[in-house]
Image 1 (cartoon, rainbow, N blue to C red):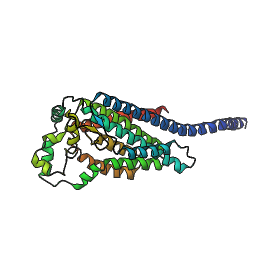
Image 2 (image 1 turned 45 degrees about the vertical axis):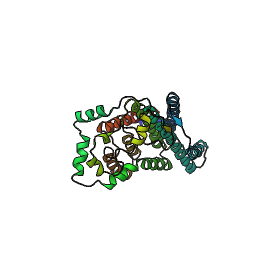
Image 3 (image 1 turned 30 degrees about the vertical axis):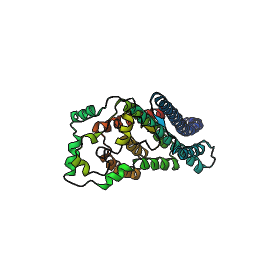
Image 4 (image 1 turned 60 degrees about the vertical axis):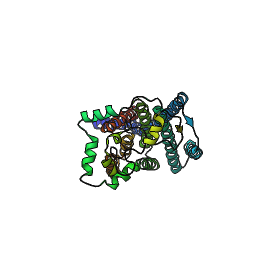
Amino acid sequence: MMGREAMLGDAAAVEPAMKPRLGFRQRTSSDAESAAVGLYRRFSLMIVVAALLVAVLLFLVTDVAFDPAGMGMAMLLLAVTTAGTLCRWTNPWLRRVGDACGMMGLTWTMALAGGFISLLGLRLRLPLADDALLRADRWLGVDGPQWIAAFLTRADWPAMVTMSYNHTVPVLTLSLAAQALAGCRAEAWRAAFCFAASLLTVCLVSILTPARGLGMWLTDATLAQLPGGAARYFWPSFDRFYSGGGDAVLTLAAIDGVVSFPSFHTVMGLITLGLWRHSPIGFGLALAWFVQMMAGTMPLGGHYFVDLLGGLGVWALWFAVSRRVERQH
């Protein structure tokens, strides 16, 4: 009896000690998510500020005029989204709306800064990297122009690929908003952080590797079978800024996806997949879109195969950093 009473006494003594421990674990998990969200947001803002400073520096050292036409509405949109995230909402639903507004404002500002960096970087007129990128593809056993021509001899160009590629930004934007409104704060802010960090990395690398893309090597017969502007839609902006002429004017309309290496379309696709990785249905739909979108990166976007690998590497780097931040908190 004494042994049983002693055991019961020990269990009773242990029970109070376990309850706070379990409660502590729950609070730690919630606090860890809040801490990770705070770090993602803080780092993202720092990256955006750094990108804006780089854009201003490039503007000062290049002979490019600036036309603010069209910026008024953009600035108003940015002000509204910023106000939405700065408000201290007590309603849980409004708090989620505030998160969504904050991410929209942050990613839009980063996209604006990144677009300006990529255009202004062309004014430095570093040697074109097209020959090197094509050689890298062939060293990997990939002949993009031949692949595209061979495909078009067997089938018409699929409209679904064009639609998926052209809607990359809306798909990513809607995915970000959906995760924020669903209350998945850590995943949504992780994606915003990866977007900002990856875009700045891509734009800085692209300054060193300016390229007109795979469209340089496609025959007229091949281009005639692709949608209008395929692989060449960004050439007018690219040539205007790279030529060194005096007609280059920095405007909102001039931003036209002039980056070849690394591929930011690949980055955006992978960020979208990451946002839905915990939802079997959402991930399945995102994967179906991703496959179609990636099929259009070379013939429609004019990317080399090595561009796609570069985009994969950039995304993997910053996603790994985001996971490290999450584990440490």
